Each structure stands twice: as structure tokens, then as C-alpha cells.
Image (spheres, protein in one colour):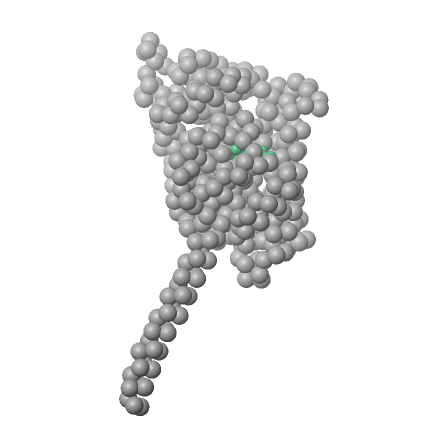
Length: 390
Ligand code: NAD
């Protein structure tokens, strides 16, 4: 009897241990399965690259919150539409009630904030939308996050992260030498960069005052697939393909650092998961180019991949036009911090990135043709026309 009890007990013990182990594993997998991230602005250029990266490289439930402005494109995320880990919420981040409801329904563990008005030239003609979305929208999102965190357990609160995606333009303009560090004082010079600087300050203040676990990334000019064709590289590609003049602002001497968007998406994932709350990280492509050199390089890629019918170079279409008011001369990024702290560095060279970008626009006319047909994207903006109260 004793031996049987002992045998029975041994089986029961092993079984209980297995059941306990299985239920712990099942709980753990449910916990990690159910963790979700809110990404704002996911139908935009960088946001859509981020969504593709997160769905491919994490187990997170990915929630895209986007108001669908002129810059959004549903086609950019069409490939994710059927994925059970992806969902879409068409809402304005300036709507506190909508945000409250989204936080309640999705119970996120992370927020990655990219929604913004993003085009400098538009900010010169109509700054009000920039103040509204970039400043007030960020404020609304911070408040919704604060309310959400107040209902979380200490453990979940400790693990929560809010990553605000910002720009190198908050640092102002450089002369021919030097680079922006994370400690460079802010000196924004356009309505766009001023609103981004304001939003960075709000994020930092909410971190200090309300103990929100915030991170900020400041990145240089992105380029790559799915960028709205008002920005320099896609604008030049599409104008060249149409045989139109390629308008280079001023004398073309302005220098930007170029970051391939897929490299950026990886950097943001690293900052979100491994960055230290309260810190900011510069992200750059180690690819400084004068605008004129960039456009000439683009023309050479097009000459090879899509030669003009008359055999002439696309470079002959380059023309210099009136400069942007307050055009910052040079941006350059010191990215030592992210390379050392998070072991991230850009992987795509500028030449490779440019070739991939040109290839993408050549292969994806169905993405950009409808935008051109709307007729708003390639016209010259931002010459300082006064349009008060728009
Ligand atoms: P984008 O203009 O391509 O996309 C912005 C997205 O935000 C759009 O899908 C738009 O519909 C959405 N949006 C705008 N207002 C909204 C609102 N009120 N509520 C909800 N959604 C709204 O921008 P992008 O180039 O992908 O830039 C993304 C972020 O990265 C921005 O915060 C921008 O300031 C920053 N950034 C961009 C660059 C760059 O080179 N593109 C460089 C540095 C920083």
C-alpha cells in the first residue's frame, strides 16, 4: 500500500509539475502574445516601414493609429491588412476621447509616436496644422498615456515605453564643420522644426514631472520606398520620369545626412526595447551629401536603369530655383551614442539605398500614380506666401 501510494504520488507529482509548467508556459506565451504597441502615423512614410518591421521582427500586436491626412497611403500597409497581429484605428491624435477608447481596447505596453505634419515647405505656408498635430497632438497622446499608466500594475508600468520620433532639425543649422550631439542646444528655425522641438520638450517634461518612461529619437533625412512625392528624392525621381525640370533650391549647396528608412526602423526598435528611459538618441545614415550632388547621383542611377528615349542624361533637367526662406545650410549627426549604447549602425550605403529607392518607384507606379493624379504633390510650396488663419 505504501509502495503504491508512493508510486501513485510520484506519478501525480510529475503530472502536477508538468501541468504547472505547461500553464506557466501558456501564461507566458499569452502575456507576450497579448502585448501590444500603438504606432501613430503608420500610414505615412516612416510609420509604414516601422509597422512592417515590427510585424516581421517582434511578437507584438501592432496597432496603427492614423488620421489619414494627404500624406497617408493605405496602400503602404495593404500587405499587413490580413495579419491577425495588425489592426488599424482611423483617428486623430488630437481627439482625447478617441485616444482613451483606443488605449482601453488595446491596453498597449508600448507607444511609438510618429504622427506629424512633416513637410517644411507646407509649414511655411500653413503652420497652424503643424502646431495642432505636432504640439497639441503630442500633448493629447502624452495625457492618454499618463491616464493609461495610472491603471497598470507596477510591473507593467516599469516595462512600459513611450518613444517619440523627432528630427535633427530641432538643433538648427550647422556651418561647414561639426555635427549635432544629443546635448546640442535646440535652435529650431522653421515652423515645422519649432513644433517638433516643442513636442520634444513636452515629452521630456512628462518624463520628468509625471515619471513617464519616455525616449526620444532625433533622426536625419530619411529616404526609401513609400515616401510621399513632395519630399526631395521621390519628387526628383517622378519629375525626371515625367521629363520635367528638376528644381534644386538655391545653389544646391545645402547639406543633409541621408538615412535609409529600413535602417531607421531597426534603430527605433532598438531604442524602444533597449534604450534608457529619459534619454534621447541621434540616428543618422553616415551619408552627408550636398543637394546638388544627391540630385546628380540620382540622375546617374536613372540614366542606367531607365535611359531616356532621346538618349540624353536626366542631369540636363536640373534647374536652380528660388531658395526656401530660412533654408538651413547643413545638418550632420554624431551617432556615437546609439552605436556604442545600442550597437546600432546604418547597414545600407547611400549608393545602395538610392538604387533600391529608384527601383521601388519604377516598380510601384500603382502606388504613386494616384497621388500625382490628385495634382497637389509636386507643385512648389513654401515660398513664404502669407495664408493667415488657414
Ligand atoms: P509622413 O508625413 O509621411 O506621415 C505622417 C503620418 O502621420 C501620415 O500617415 C498622417 O496621416 C499621420 N498624421 C498626421 N496628422 C495626424 C493626426 N493628427 N492624427 C493621426 N495621424 C496623423 O511623415 P514621415 O516622413 O513618415 O515622418 C514620421 C515622423 O518622423 C514625423 O514625426 C516626422 O517629424 C519624423 N521625421 C521624419 C523625417 C523624414 O525624413 N521623413 C526626418 C526626421 C524626423
